[in-house]
Image (cartoon, rainbow, N blue to C red):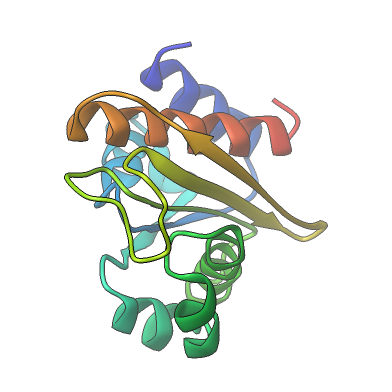
Amino acid sequence: MTKKKLCSDLLSTLAGKTLATAESCTGGGIGQALTAIPGSSKVYKGGIICYVNQIKRDLLHVPASLLETEGAVSASVAEAMAWGAREALGADVAISVTGLAGPDGDEFGRPVGTVFVGCADGSGAVVQEHHFCGTRSQVREKAIQAALALALARSGG
C-alpha cells in the first residue's frame, strides 16, 4: 500500500478521533505525509520531533532511567513516546517511531535499520520491532510506512 493510501485510510478510519505523532529517526516524515492529505486537520493534531533524548525526556516524559538502561532505540522507549505524545497533545491515538537510520548503530549493539514503531490509544499500546535494509532515506521511508500501517491496523482499518 502506498504511503498516501495509508494516510488516507488511517485518517478516514480515525474520523471523529484525534491523532498525534512522536518521531525520532523519521524527523517529522509521518506528520508531513499526513498533512499532505486534504482535510487531515480534522484528525491530525500535530507531532513532536524528539530527535534527542532531552526532548524525549522533557516533552514526552520518557523516563531518563529507561533511556540510560535500554537506549533510545528500544520497544520500551517507543511505547513511552506514544503515551507521551498522546498525553502532551491530548489525542485519542498516538504513533511513535524511534530507530537507527544510519550511518552507525548504537552503543547497545543495535545495527542500522533497527526501528521500533508504537501506537497508543484508549485500550493500550502496541510496539513492533523492524529491521530494515537500505540507505538512510530508505530506512526512514520504510519506518514511516510501518508506523502508519501499525496505526491503521490498530484502529481497525
